[in-house]
Image (cartoon, rainbow, N blue to C red; front, side):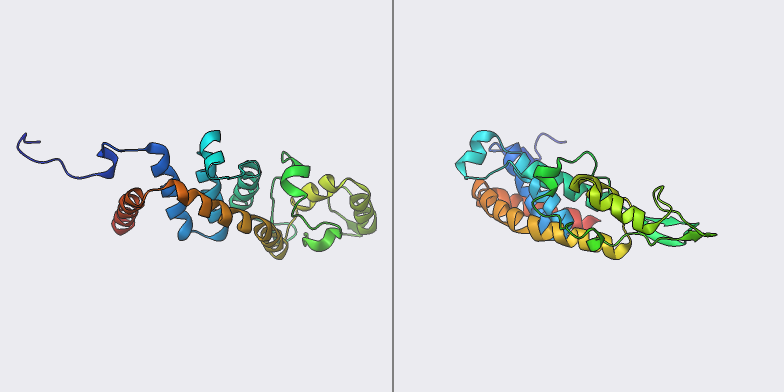
Length: 209
């Protein structure tokens, strides 16, 4: 670059550059055009960027954020699987490592276990073959007698598309109000200048895609 030339403007070269503020702002901007699950993920990532002091300053309860983020990420990452033998498409959502009481119990509706529709029982000859249970009545009995966590984790490994959609819907009913409130509080940490700069960067990136 010629010494006489002025450097091209970039908000990241600003002397008032604040990395945390800009990252929080970028996540919030991304959340505006994202799907509902992605929006939850972006807002949670923005909130988890804050120090304890900054969170207290805006009265943001960051306690539930990590759990909400983890559940949203598991649901977003789940892809439909086609079982060639059963000729049915289903989802496997891995929830076994979640803290059931903190991350799941506040929103999951599993008092009636078929609430999240599972793969149908299929026959091979005269035998039903689902999860090691030969009889569907025995299967549902075992599911009902297990702990809520066991029932939830097993159900989520055998979800047909409508069951997966219902699971996502129940989660969003719980998560969206929390993340919308969190997003509103997070904006208190973002200056108008930072928002304008980051929106310019975001629009430029979208334009070049």
